[in-house]
Amino acid sequence: MRPLLLLASALIAGLLVSSAASPVPFPYHAFCRTIWLFGLPCADVGTRLVQQIRAFSPAKACEKCHYMLVSATKESIQAHHTSVDKTQVESLEFDLHTTVLTSSCRVSAQSTSLAFTSLFDGGLNYCNLYDLLTASGLDSAPGFLEMTSEWACLGYGSATCRANTTHTLYD
Image (cartoon, rainbow, N blue to C red; front, side, top):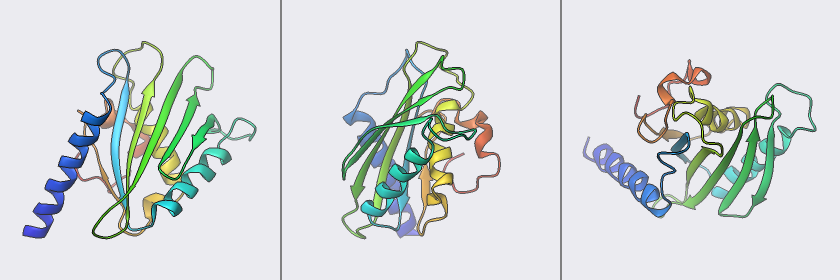
């Protein structure tokens, strides 16, 4: 019980520290912040995310193909998501960090609406991240754990894309 409490405390501290490192885009834009933990090296996680963003590029003919890769390094991935009607654009950022104790990967993921819209986006920003996570198969990766809440991810509770999700620490 004590190791689990220690792990949960460390993860919550990580969420707060990552929020302090880059300011929350509040109160002008809808946004979602989440932390993903994987029992995989960050190189593997980053490769799968980049491959999925490219697979969902507008050049492909699929329902979710509205992602555009902006940049990718070993530690950071940036992309954009555009709505089907091209009226909304969201900026996606993934910061990848190797954990000290287990050499696994911690990803701080964020999706932010670029337009001045309602803060309650019905889970759109969460679904931008979730769709990449599930399509890449990373939600089934060893050691996968997601940490977010309605405070860190506006519209998280109403996001229809996670209707059958059981992987979250906080609901």
